[in-house]
Image 1 (cartoon, helix red, strand yellow):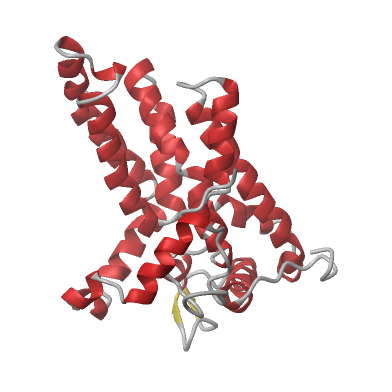
Image 2: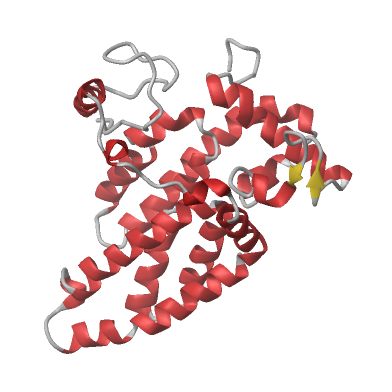
Length: 282
């Protein structure tokens, strides 16, 4: 940013799409083009087109306070804010069961993980990274303290931020519930506690559905648009479930070296868009 006079330039999709998408949405909302927008391809539904990228993001609405032309100068600072929020939310989650120093270390590892670093080109991914820990924090508060509002808020905000990632987050949250509250840890002691936790499942599902309903203004039209996409009927072939040998080498490399930009790797392959990055900072 210092080198480029305040501008943050990364590569590929970041420069070609992420900057222009946020600027387009800023202008469209301020001009009232929020139903059908002729500036998307040859015309498209505005909500279903941008609910994946911007419309549910609190970080986008922060940038909305400024002119669209200012976004290329704001994006670097907002990116820093996303990393800070990721550190804060993960720290709040880790601190419930770890010392302050351990929670701080965990939050740094989470915020600056390989996945986070390699996906800098995908600016909107970091909205999800920043707010995902709220789901586990909200569930813990619901299960351990009986507080419903944090879980309801966490479901709503994550469903708003990105419907696609939210589906994966739900699967993870189910796995987290089973491993922590039904079959593992001090929160699932044999006998009465396990049965007590199991009896809370319907209430958690109901509150989760209520949270999704509160996010329905973006979630429902987005899912409807996806289901009406003709590509939904395409089948996954067996070859798509495996990788060629350079990608396996790339996975091995990712264990020992920091992530690079997806657009231009220094070894093994020239470019790769699979988010292959397992390296953690130390």
